[in-house]
Image 1 (tube, one colour):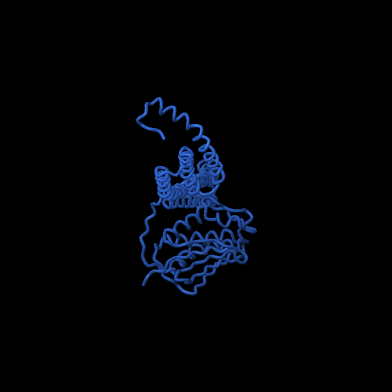
Image 2 (cartoon, rainbow, N blue to C red):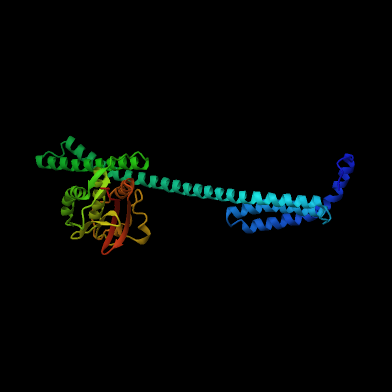
Length: 348
């Protein structure tokens, strides 16, 4: 034993004398601990933290026992008990901290992945919107220049150009409205004024706007209701959801096809389903149809000649449905696919 009252030179000599013994016992424990850490590095972070706590404690015990000459004196027993108590306290803390760090790491990794996906969708959206805006703007500019230069002078031709300019202007206005609505949803700035809304009125308003479009394409639109539920929501936003779903179904259904709107109640929720004749969606794309700017496989519409939208309609529908605490999903069904919306019923 080292007497603390001895001169420092004597203490130093004692330390030098026991140092080889300490190193001979501690280094193998440390090397073994390094191997254990290497083995558990691919396991949970809590396991790694536990190993990090136990390795130095085990090395300390090995050194103390070796220096004592394996003589279990009261002093050595006290040191061993203290080390055991330290392990009993620090190991659970290490496990808790390991789990906390693991959860935070997973959350940060998922956040980075979401951020990268969001940035990719933004770039894709900008590319699509730039292309979609350029086409109608070029047409409007060409027709306006033709009218201004007098190239078109006949009243019938002038009226035709004016109608086409109006059509393209409304198309641009709709795209701008979609962008504005989507920005409100993604920014969390969407504020709904909720009230009791009858789905019958919502579906009727949406179909009255979409049936003329369907007739021009020779697509039949049918509505069938097992019940007319009342939900707690915002009439304009719910009408927009149905409008977007029916418009999307008409766009992807070939001429002489059918779009069916089904309404009912299931499991204490209002259910609104829109079936189309798109020919089905590839399984790999079913989870992406609600992504911003996603348009899917061009061959999805058999024989379709309608221009593709900006890829915002379904993303807006999903955001509005979720703002109503509802759910929306897509699945293949029959000759096409089904978009199903589930909304909470209004409490009576």
